[in-house]
Length: 235
Image 1 (tube, rainbow, N blue to C red):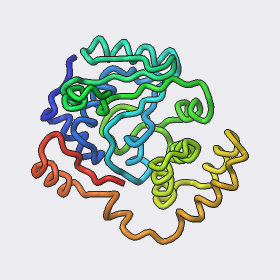
Image 2: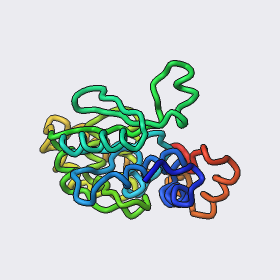
Image 3: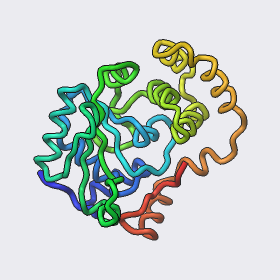
């Protein structure tokens, strides 16, 4: 088992199926190779959006894990030849230098990377426990259910997270479940959540046009832009 090439058929297939940059598709394949089937690990963040009905460009892969599983993942990535670093006791990163050559040359942190997020707090812990097999990513990894993904995005509150939240609402996430998850984590956020849901439900033109590309379009984008290109548009 080694690091697959960007032009490996398996990597291209993952990129096409998930609408992801080939660099991120390769990270997904690597993660699937080192993650045991019953491990307490799940994909969250931007890479989990396709299973919720929305996709956008992302440079990284967020893996949420219970603490013991997170430590095993980091060791496995390192043993495979990736660079790894613990930012905090609960957050590690793994990356390939070749994916980040420009950033490294500028003395910056890698942006094309795997973020391993170790957690026992809610709602992330329950999101890991209830994660489901991905139908969109083409790898044997579990992803956050869309209700948990939307709730976590809303609670994070960063601009891109809130845009993602809106798109998940527009894609049909179970908002009653989202309300319950958010209220359980922090009931003071419920009024803001209800207002956000109402705003997200206003007519939005172009959800399908900007969020989804069919496979033929994805293949054409990859041929036109090359292996390093993102094959889905930014959200």
